[in-house]
Length: 240
Image (cartoon, rainbow, N blue to C red):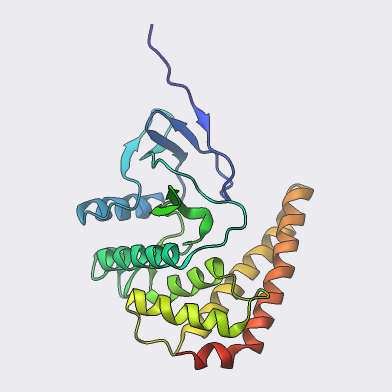
């Protein structure tokens, strides 16, 4: 009799698809852009970028198989240390460098992850270890991922002072090696507006009250964060 491996659902993330853990692998449904994600993960493996899962093939149910990365993914509010943030932004730099000039980047600078956020960062002993969930990856410019990173990790638009935020942004740009910062605030606003549109759309088409309420509350918060960035733009830019 063939032993059927146990499937353990992985819960707590922000993905709507069913993800299961089997042994040392993760199995996920494929999507319309999975071919790009698989090609990207293969490229990262070729480039020896070791802070991402490996694509291992397709299982008998048609699901993609990825290597399982041991660690924890923070889904609650977390106060990130400077050392952790520097580690993450250097991981991002290495990811971008691995994709720069590749066919996947097309006519853009790099391939962007497009969702580098706490909920897609694996920690081991509180040390950032890897990025996961490359479903939104696409050709883009370095500043796009940087802007989203600043928004989600530094909580840009919260009650934290603009001066404090600006100093952290400068330190992290230096750690990344990002020189052209003139469009950084525009890029943050663009990321916020993009996710706002997504949340407004999801609130309209949500099939249950919990999903509708979540998107509506997120939309309210993002509108407030956009107003904050616009109001404190000068202070943020002056730090550079």
